[in-house]
Amino acid sequence: MAEEFGWGSKLPAEVESKEFAIPPIGEYNFMVVDVEKTYAKSSGNPMLKVRLDLQGAEGCVFDNLVISENGMWKLVSFFESIGVKEKGKELGISIGDAADKAINKEGRCKIKHDTYNGKTSAKVDSYIYVKPAFDAKAAEAELPFEI
View 1 (cartoon, rainbow, N blue to C red):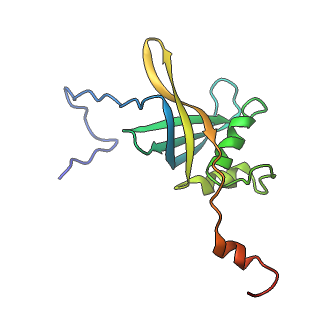
View 2: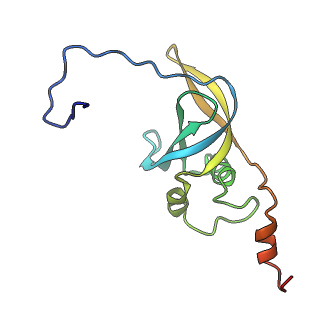
View 3: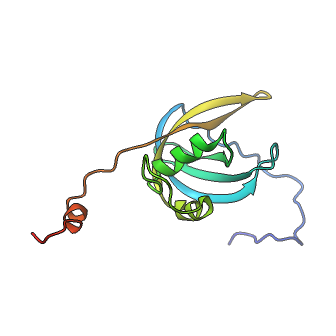
């Protein structure tokens, strides 16, 4: 049975260091596993910190989607890639409500590598919109007459 830790726990003398896997550069399908509503340290703007589980690669990647004029392109492409926002149309709900709907949604993204202070990490370069497959049953349900 795993040891339970809490605020009253003592720190052990030594622990094994863990290295996080860095996925290779490329395109990946992903699942949104967490969305945290927070604020950017640099600007104070509202921000969504999303955690994406990449399919076909070990590990996950985080992306900070700042709610600002300069960051809007990435926020829009994120919501379009996971199907919460229809491409070319207004969202229709608040960004906060859309963030709540993002958990467990799937999308596609392009991963790049970024090196800062000698440490390499994986970053989301862009989100990729994938046109939804034609759903015959859904199309039939929207017909103004019965077949």
